[in-house]
Image (cartoon, rainbow, N blue to C red):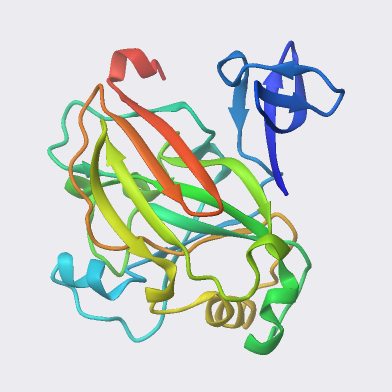
Length: 251
């Protein structure tokens, strides 16, 4: 089942797909462009992975790390479907990252790989932008790169884990202003979902609403003001985002 969270007529609503747009939980049907799309679940800790596809690490001339490259994000970094992301005027290379986002449903610590999927509630699509000009070190991605207001897009749908199953081999792709620039499959993750859950839960408690951004494959290119960036994952959804300048972003 696919579910969304949207703001409409001064309130926040749960919503499901409808042939004419969205069906709100109270039964009203509204157009997709009549609402403000929010992240499709109540956010907990945002845990992001870097360089978790071998082809992307090679693309960036970076060898495979000894353990997962993990960093955290605050809630202010996250926006929803059809939101705007700012490209600062002083940067030369800003790129998207299409990622499968894993949403935790059951709390746990010291979770074994064999039990990991019992702790997964579902999935959504993430587009996690990076500004390469600001990057200090791949082992220490700094806050300006990875915790920017509006730099992480989630949605539009939350998809139940049961609808995907435990064989998570999903095609993903990115389009920049209509041109396909990236493709990959989650089968190529260096650290797969059970491995990530086992690793993370060894030193931190995972709680419902925590979300793991699993990394992006090769094919990242620069985006410019005015670009429409579409990141999509088969069976999960199609996430749309717009790149704007400093003045349009306004904060």
